[in-house]
Each structure stands twice: as structure tokens, then as C-alpha cells.
Image (tube, rainbow, N blue to C red; front, side, top):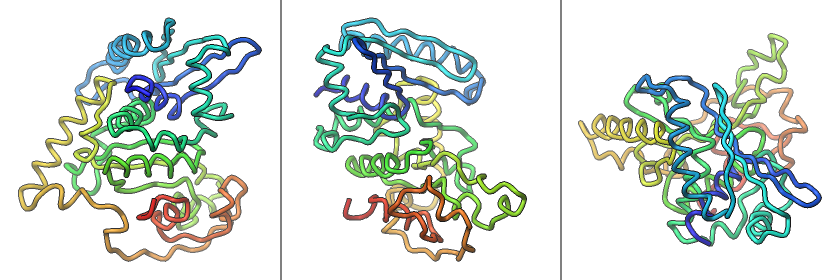
Length: 296
């Protein structure tokens, strides 16, 4: 293993699609950019294109082939193809198993045995294709900035990634699960005739300053992260030490859960079997039941 391969595996795990052919495998990696402007009012597409130049220079020597790049207003694509017998393709497939895309992929147990630097590169690759860092992503106070990682459908991958963050000592501040008790906790949308409103992407939220040791290879995200982390630390340290506030895991934070009414969709087939049919008043209990806990 090396840092470049770890970064590539992170990108594929976070937002990749694996197209297996009879003789050749094509891997497509999607880099979404929801907003057209960066936090500094520059064109996101230009920043992403500049970032891709650096990313390609990192990956192409590893791959031994060129990486194609295509871009639209809200998404950029990286792709490459190699024969099925190629050692690198076989290596990638060993790590991702029979997964066809990020929607059913898991983080291989082998990744957790990577060196700390390699795990951080895996996380960076994952973040570059799943994470957002925007001024609007604060928690109560406008200076309490967070990084959002968005993972659609794949419940197990959420837990895997949180455990990987824990392995490099990065706490998760919150998980907004795509679960009926979380996304329609008072049945407002259900009563409006929208029973599937809660079926949204899962969002992992990490304090900006806690994510700083990893950073982004995508330039505009990294610039925003640095600024927001500085603002956050300065705000907290007016009265206390920043890490005393942010460097805490959910099992270290006391709190009361507000009781939520039962939701008819708690038995929905899209919910993993181990938590299907259960009622939850807190995101923390879902995380615990799916394996992200003090013992993970």
C-alpha cells in the first residue's frame, strides 16, 4: 500500500462506480459541486478543474494510464479503464469486493490496518468526493463551522467511515441519518401525504477544526476549511480551549433525548435488518447499533 493508492481507494469508496466488462474494467468517480460559486465567490468549476490537474498528476503514475475528465455545471467526472488482468484493477477489486458502486460498497477491514498516513489519505480521497464545507453548515453559532459528508443509501458505509475517522482520532459531531425518526421526527411530512420524505442521504458532520489534520485536495474546499477552522477556534477561545469543546465523542457527551412519536416507516425494507422495526429518539443509538461506538 502507498498514499496514492489509499487516496484512490477513498475516492472510489466515497463516490465511485465500477463497470466490469468481459475484458476491461472502467472506474468512474463523481465529484459533485452543488453550488456554482465558492465561499469566496469564484467559479467552483474552475477550482475543481485546477484541482483535478493536481489529482491526475498524482494518480496517473500509479495507474499507468491516463485519467479522463469531464465536467458539467454541478458535477465533475474522473474515469479510467484497464484490462481485468491488470494488477492494479485486481488490487482495487480485492479491496471493494463485489461492490458495483458507492451505494453498496464497504470499507475493507484491510484499510483499518493501513498506516496512519495511509488512512488519512483514504479519508481525504473520500472527502474530496463526498464532503462539503460551507458557511451555512454551522451549529447554532455562525462561527461553529462543520464539514458535511453526504452518503446516500449506504447505512453500513456511514458506520465504517465514522470508525475510520475514530482510528485517526477525529470525533463525529453528529450524524443526520436518513431514518424516519430523524428526518420526519414529528410525522409532519407523513401527514402531508409524503411518506417517503425521510429517504434522504445520510450526513456525517465533523467540526471544521477537527478535520484540519486531513484537509482536501480540492482547492476551494481546502481554502474554506482553513478559513472556517480559524474562525471557529478564535470564537471558542474567547472563553475556553477549543479542543475542550470540539474534541469529544458522542459517548463522552451527556444529554437528554427528546421523545419522538413512532413513525409508520420504522419497518421500511430500505432500513438495515439490525435496526429495522426499532424506534429511535437519538442519532447516537442508531450509530451504536450499527457499530460506531466506544468499542469500535
